[in-house]
Length: 125
Image (tube, rainbow, N blue to C red):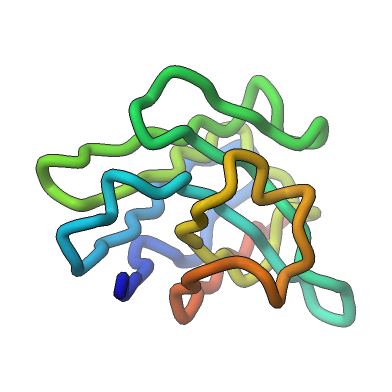
């Protein structure tokens, strides 16, 4: 069992940066793929990026490539999403997830193993 809690969201101007954290409980967090998703008002939840358990690979959706970076510290049971050059269209609730799959972005959202509660990110123009 893994429980996830996001933090670090807030209001930022366009072009600014935020770093989200995902604190995990449970000794098996290190064996899961860490993923970030987001959901904008009136839209479906979408994949942002993922990071392998051992840190050997990452995967990002095209709209955030070069601006967002996922990392993790398994010793601290924490994952991160560094967001730079933020745009108003990045405004959304951001969720971290832990999944047994290597490619969580290919799975139905209902199949993802664990979700956090989400944290709001608002980017003003």
